[in-house]
Length: 343
Image 1 (tube, rainbow, N blue to C red):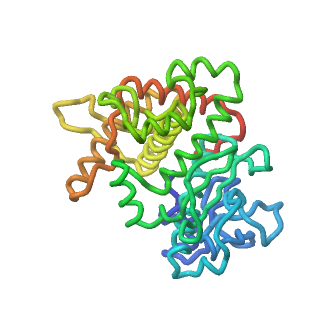
Image 2 (cartoon, rainbow, N blue to C red):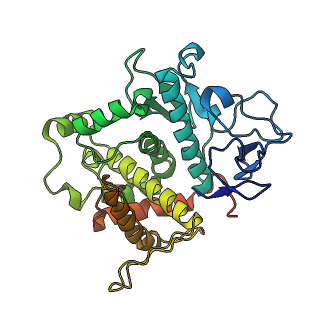
Image 3 (cartoon, rainbow, N blue to C red):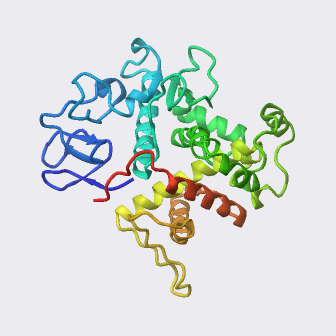
């Protein structure tokens, strides 16, 4: 995420800002410009109150409509279930906030995010398991998210039951959207089939049987040497989705560090332990990694100083780095939509 400032007084403001606390200017995010702007005379997303959305409509779009992010939500709980103080309403707003960050990153990377038309494109079903059974997953471009994942207690319980080191709403969205982008970046190009299988395995193997075996037997003892997470061992599709999600984690965090001028120099005895991330797109993933490793080492150390778990509790083996570099090359090759400008 980039750093944003009020266009009037230049005070730092968060991505979710609706007004500047310093000068009172009404603010909103303009997805066409990729900036937080003054809302004067601009049409706001109709989901401002319901979803806490601060995105603006394009100048050519009629007032009263939904923004580029909210249009991607295909299904959600009824308005009556989304009262301001209701757990479902709070979880829904948290999910939409995470989705806006996800969509921003897609636009920033130049990844195509066309709304689902029934056959192609991307859509999100944000549903509550309090009303009916919900299975988080992806099918044919539709990402389904159980809003219960927005509840800290439920998410922590699931994290412990599944022995996961990391579990967040944004992480779920990144993983499940990774399944969608497999169809866009890999499946749509016949030339990508063999390179993909050489790294991730044969995705044509029985998916249901692979998941059953994973949950019954678990990963092999040495899984960390070839996979970014234990769940990635279940099937090549899950390996891709986990790797894609981690690629987004890394790109977003290093961009944030660059936007705020974070510099990690490390101990004086190790002059190579330095991170100076750049806002400019990197051609090679190895260049990103050179900044990521010392940066995340420092961030993990800060978390431990506060008595918290590591911010990024994962090991990137050489095999995982090769997979991440593969994702990076595919993302860099996409020309589906223009990246947002770098200020």
